Image 1 (cartoon, one colour):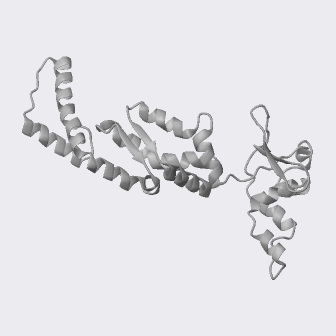
Image 2 (image 1 turned 90 degrees about the vertical axis):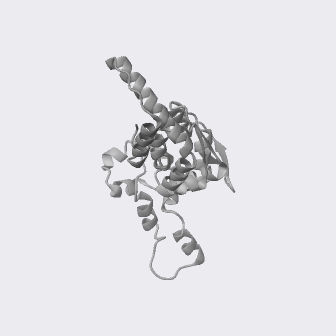
Image 3 (image 1 turned 45 degrees about the horizontal axis):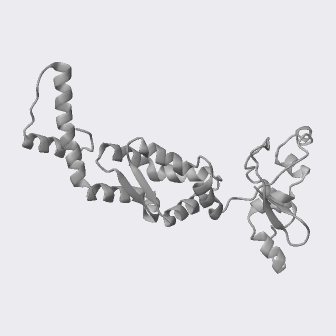
Length: 240
């Protein structure tokens, strides 16, 4: 968290919020817009260049000017607001902020996805332009750092479903992957089709071995039968 200090041009200093308890925290949607309206910065007609510049600022910037009356007008009971004497307005996270969170925060969501894939013996490398694309899309979600989870889940959902049943053990994530995950996944699977077929053929032998253990009967699949099973499984997008 950054705080402004000193007079004149404000400088910024970072402080840790690890031991600070925040209560009644939330996005307070539309509160900034209400404050902006109260300050008469959103008006119809022609105004000075300064007023027009103020009108163009994000509504979230006006949260710093929120007063008790704004919270009451927002819907809080006066008795409740009176018990919250200290109010802290946080600036909206930019794409740069989200990229830093994605790369450096403790237990960040990107590492969580790496661990998820590692459970299937699959790894991935994410290039810088992919990090930037994730951060930009997360910023558009306007849900803070939660947007990172939304974007990454949208990207990796089908990968987590498809790759464990293939022989693919690593893949690269670039900006195109974030922009169109379905298309890039299809390209990845198509380019590794030989590995996929080999894995499915091995699955047939594995099934025969397990069948012999469970039922005491030995099944022998000839090569044409194995190939036919693999074709059916591939066509129906199912395991052997």
